[in-house]
Length: 180
Image (cartoon, rainbow, N blue to C red; front, side, top):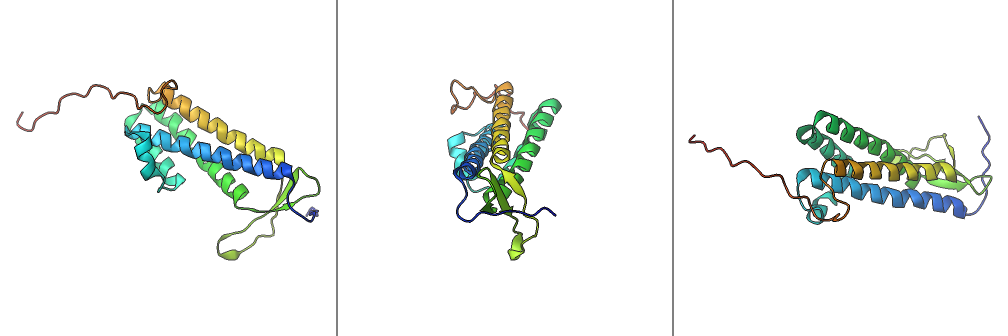
């Protein structure tokens, strides 16, 4: 077992900045996830925010995966589901980073995260993580968000020139009457 060196005092600015990058990147990815869900449902995004704001991210991602399977071609659904799976993994890493208890490591670019579990159990596994490694997680979040938006654009559900305007629905066929 490697001996960890902890410095007294607050985290370095490098570590605070890296952790902050994860918070901001996740907030953006979370918005993109809600945007994807509103577009797959065919509802106005601003109105949908009143609903999605009350949903856990995992529930939003599960809903996207279900809708993708129902509404998209097999290839488009598989691509969308894969992006959701990547977001789920990033959500776990986000939780570890943002909800961890950090101590300053031996150098300004190293932090030591104390792992807590439910009901106050603390593990003896306290991994070191560098500011660069944390920034890579933030970059991964940004990449998944960008790929989700590009996916929506390819599906015709997003126009970057009018981002908040929902695309016009395809002309619907007249309903079949029961009397026919």
